[in-house]
Amino acid sequence: QLQLVESGGGLVQPGGSLRLSCAASGFNLDYYVIGWFRQAPGKEREVVSCISSSDISTKYVDSVKGRFTISKDNNIVYLQMNSLKPEDTGVYYCAASSDYPAHCTAVRRKGQYDYWGQGTQVTVSS
Image (cartoon, rainbow, N blue to C red; front, top):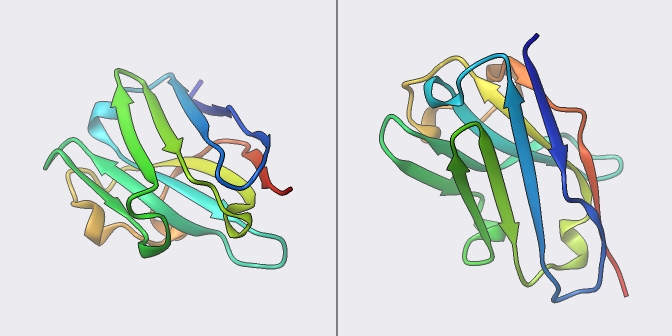
């Protein structure tokens, strides 16, 4: 069974922090490009961060640079989210792309990812 499971979402006030986790089972994430996506109500699911072991690089959408940090420890990928803003609200998904060893810059569309978690809700509100 190939599976990704997200956890760590919740309700947080603006300026607060959350750490999302994505646990993989059934395959080795060392050989995939891993992306974090979010989908706000009524909007398309879009990538917010990516990590690829091929070039030990991490990438972030401009709106989260300096606030979010993606990392990986074995088969768990984390997204540390600091200084959260209301516009960060949405369902967050982790996904794995078999386009590895492609760089993150080449894997930015949801259609390029093969495996998806069920999502975890992040709500930033006062």
